[in-house]
Length: 323
Image: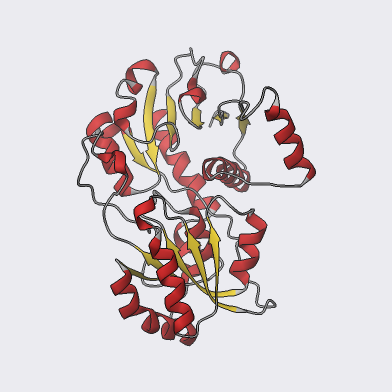
């Protein structure tokens, strides 16, 4: 196969409060060693790791005009900026973070020579297919670094539950409080970690110290944090209402869409609940299964979501375009 050109471009940092403060903020973060990696960037980094495992030759962010005819191009970026200046005929395999909904970019396939648009899971892919066409949309799960996100039997499990709070819309905020109160009332120890407010090392350490995780998010295209917990062999009790709840869905004319917060999950991984009543009814039975060793979530991840499997799937998609 010809060398693959991976593109990961995000909009340049802008000033937040005063002119030039973007440089001060960047410097402060480097001094304090505040390292947060976005989900979109992790998708890209893990693809590179997967290609490394397979000894696949690739470049990162090579200028478009230096890419030769017939060489594959994969664009995994953040917003429209990722494709600015693309003026070569090479078909593009693009995806994940370029838009939130296809209605935001209906002429995407006309503006650029896009061959495939990727989504992590089937339910999100189903949103894009009516706009871009079945043949133009593909499911590509990102890989999990299972060597890093592995259980450590030498670390004591201090907490019964780690509560992962990724509740996105205010009307659901009470759920976190209700769940922690219920856990306290039933004698369970827990810690809460909030999406966007931690560095990865803290999450990693809490997973190692927790016997199970309660995952709270309205829906996920993949759910990296949840998959990382599963890889660490931490069973998950997930809030899963089964519907897409983004308030903008009405504007995008998608009022009723099936969705899930756990698109990569089976009976080895844990269980789910739909609301607080369901949580209360199921939590103790779930806990009994946890302490009896009934779950084996890491086996699911090793079977379905490794770096190598994800990279192999990407190669399948590339080969379908660059025949």
